[in-house]
Length: 164
Image (tube, rainbow, N blue to C red; front, side, top):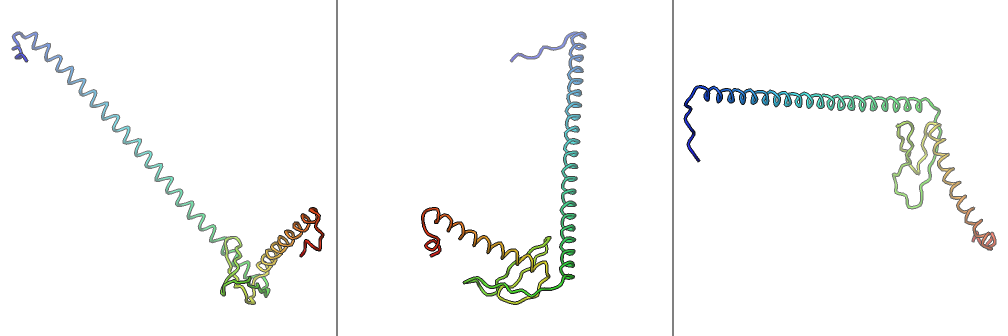
């Protein structure tokens, strides 16, 4: 590399100083733009974080409201069931059913576990639900046998043979 030339006249010095000032101004403009962009990004990030916090807060509030409503429904159902007349029921155990098994009934989130193989007094509405459940199961079993019998009759097997 060659050695820099010494500045000999005033005009050359003035030109170099102008260029230096222009470069410094450009650098200042670029720094200002950079700072402005950084500030805008920071503000945007803050806004996003505020929205996120708001959404999270709203979600927590909704969960709490839902939980409170659920507890209200459960408490209301419990009180309604307490006020109903009681009916004595017996749920027979299925073959090979373990001792201490229960039959669950849930009404508006309020769950009752009815012991199987014991006589117990339950609210009338619960007894109706259990009766309907057993009736539907019985109807489904009988309907299956009916369908099997009809299919066998259609295949040319007598009803007596189909039942055996």
